Amino acid sequence: MFNLQAPLSIDNRSERSSKAAHWALIGLVVAVLLAGCTSGTRPTDTVATDSSTASSGSAVVRIGWKGAPDTLNPGMAFLTDAYTIFNLVYDTMYELQLDNTFTLSLAESVSTSDDGIVWTYKIRPGIKWHDGEPLTARDVAFTYNFYHDHVDFPYLPTYTEHFASVVAPDDTTVVITLDQPIPNMEAQLVFLYILPEHIWAAHTEGNEPFEYANLEMVGSGPFQLLEYKQNEFVRLGTNRTYFDAHAKVDEVIFQSFQNVDVLVQALQTGQVDMITELPKTALPILENAPQVELVTGPPLAPELSDIFFNQIDPANCPVDAGGKCTGHPALRDRTVRQALAHATDKQNIIDLLLLGLGTPGLTLIPDSLGIWYNATLQDYAFDIAKANQMLDEAGYQDSDGDGVREMPDGSRPLVFRLFWADDTTDAPRMAELLSETWRQIGIRVEAQTLDPDALLAVCCPVFDFDIIIWGWTTDPDPTLLLKVMTSDAIPNGSSEAGYANPAYDLLYAQQATELDLERRKALVWEMQEMVLNDVVYIVPYYVQNAQAYRTDRFTGWITQPTVALEDPASLLNIEPIP
Image (tube, rainbow, N blue to C red; front, side):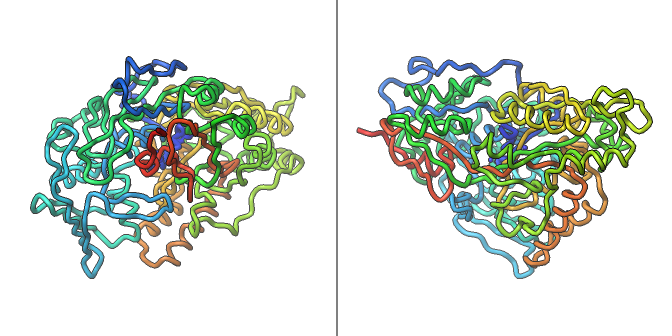
């Protein structure tokens, strides 16, 4: 969902995959709040032309992707595509390196009080916004307080949860006072995109923070917005006054494609210079394509595919936020969810969809998150006989012999609505595979693809679905994706499944402030065991990234140690081939 590259998604929320939920996301939106930010237009497969988008004779990099930002408002973004653009246009206090370490960015130094409560940052002097106005510590303090005060933003307020106060005593000093020490300050600030107070101060009241489209998108980052056509393209120009390294190209255009096959063809024909995603079936084609380099490896933002169930208790339905909560009641039964897990052949999905470029998943915390991944957990074995036995014993019978079980009281057949986003390239085939194996345990699905906006609208906090296939791209710290399974995440739409467990909520609060690394790790591992037992999600796989670029126009793409060609580090390094 948020890639959260946020709030790290989701394709993955596009993919949610999005940064912070890019990391995150990524993934979901309060439809009524986004109504002012989105339209119903669809991506096109027409590549933006020089005459409409680029200055004559300039070095323009064209990047193709199977998605588009859901909004240019950082507070309201769910999809990975949005966070990809935010990372290029905005600055943050820290920068995440391609080796998943942190370095100071906006700040030139930081000091911390002995008790870990007060963090003092010295902001670099002379930084300017894209409109020429100076960026000062007051913009930073305004931004952090803005995110903190607007708790209905889906993801970014999570990062400010322990901020007791943020002040700017002068133009170069930001002082953050916490309510208690936390173990991951860098991870809290790395996705809090700094906004210009002179623009955003007029959009802090009422519905303005949620409805403001931010179409001018004034930032201070290495690239600035030149032109934007929703669901078509985002055109960025190099910020020649940037305080750090300048790009060696003039413009970067992100072009949306509705059809993934056309996207791959556009790379082969030279209509685009790089593609951020591709179906695994295209790997053999691109491996042998002339003047194309295919790269695979771990993603900068760990990425996963997920299947989640509408398991919200009607008593928790967020009616005030538009909740309908129409999920099939059988999905609130853990036994049914466990049977579905036993009837999901993850290895077959990996072999057919990823050509082996993935590992079976357990929970939202992926294996590439290092110490935070609980490698001791045992997954649900693919076992059709056991799944049938569980449903038989729980009273789900096929009384009329039509091959579909009914609720124990006979009130409804086990027919579930299965949705996915049409920019999630592997979801259609996955839906077919799930339908085949789930049918063997007496469960039928009604499969339907939706465009991302429509899927977001039925998801959260509306809960007008039964099962959704999507995905996440996550933070380097586990807090964000752990947060989406808390009770507090239900009303604001960042909870997808409607899962509510007081014991889990308590563990979440404890890990968020635990300074001892081993104790925090133990809490995070316990939380993963809890949600695996409750089958909050079925995670078919954790993925390896696959991207491709042309070798005849630009050189310098950074492909190690992680594969993220759209990352600022890579786009700032490439240069035209003479």
